[in-house]
Length: 116
Length: 114
Image: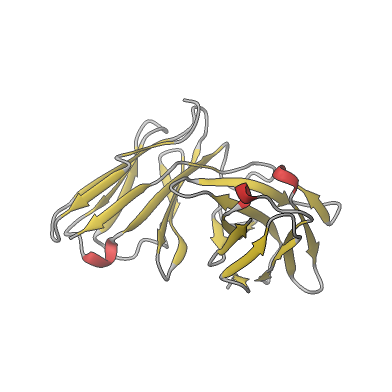
């Protein structure tokens, strides 16, 4: 596609429900990153994929958070039993290859998650 | 551990005035440096990056930044701002041996007034 696509753009969910956030990277980009943007915490790294593997998931805040990537393309971030502190904008980015020197990460417009 | 500090959370400035957004970083290994801009309800857009070579880097929309290794700084500058530059600006470092993940500063909200 022309850019990184994230869906939904907005999601309101009740506390305790599970949510799935989707990221469709730029075609041909093998690296995919998830970040969270929240008030008071700024932009935090969550996890990245190179292909379908996740070499670094150190930023996932708890075991309620998980992510997968299939076919080296679309990725899904799942939050189980959502809590109010999960409310944030979740940003996805992709780049040609993780760790490649002269490469740029392109960001999607994010999914705004509100837990009520 | 690596960290990025943006010294000003908000910078108000009048149109056509110069502006400098400050960024300092801490890292024990070599890094690449970036500035991103986020317009309201948008994702992040790359303004400029420093990978190597000349320490003065020019980016889009008339912005430039200077890498200062001794002061571990990467301040962003523009000689004359426009109303359309109103946005949030993020400084980030990419650690060379950590898969390309970015560590961001807290952001600086630039507000340009007429």
